[in-house]
Image (cartoon, rainbow, N blue to C red; front, side):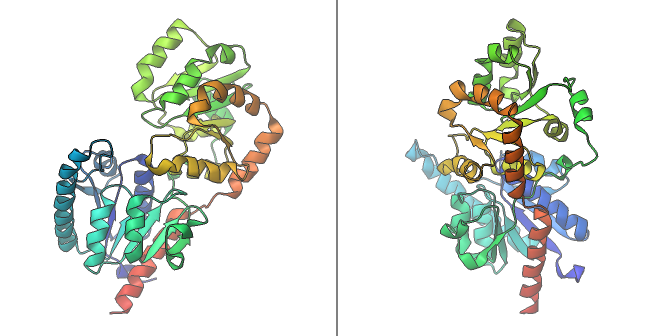
Length: 375
């Protein structure tokens, strides 16, 4: 492998952790194998990638792009104007940076960036995290050189000859084979003799999941199960107040869990939204999970993600509107059912696609090599 073949890589996208984690994982894999390669990110101004990407050690430039407002169509005149400005700025970025390839991970910024790159003769690769393709990636697919996906059956969205099943790159710091459950339980001050349910709704939290727990404290108090509850920062004060007024020794509440490797290792069962990155992590770690898809995402893609697992017995799916009634009772039953936990563990492990970042970088390198060889 001639490491000098590739010199500059442009990576664009973001908006949510589900886009940013894979993007940074791909960048990290490129840097590990090709230390000389210069990597530049392009994100959307005021979105979380503008903080997360520099924190990971990479340079990022922001575009003034943001999504269409489906409720107030008049506001879309400004959206269109900013889209035009973003295309102009993206053209300048591509011209100045001269990337060997542009990688799009979905999100607002990847649209104008990959659109411009492909029309300026730069090869492009798309990475689609979800089982239901996003609008941006669908629009860019026709001109892409390769499309890396995490689910089978994506031919209904993309040209079949461009699809490569790679899985989603995940945070590598979650994989720690030396970490024991005993150490993880001790880290959180939990009881090693009790079954543990980990509840996560993302860094910002998930209102319905939090409400489900708040309304079931009596059931949790009377059970022999303990709960590690990440409420999200937005619900931290509310949850603390609730537990002060209704003490429950079975519940360990935190605004944000920084050591997710510890949290996953401690858990016998996970309750989570159905974002693509979370699901990929759960598959790789082989964790039984109850998925409560968020209804507030584009094209209801979290429900499609969850159905891909539940249809194979790899997860239990509970609709958001049913969570307050069903979530905790079902979780308490499931976590005590050793046979079902074991079958779910096997099923979700079978769906894992390890070494995703490595496979994606292999494809990136091959595209660049073929492009330069053809000149």
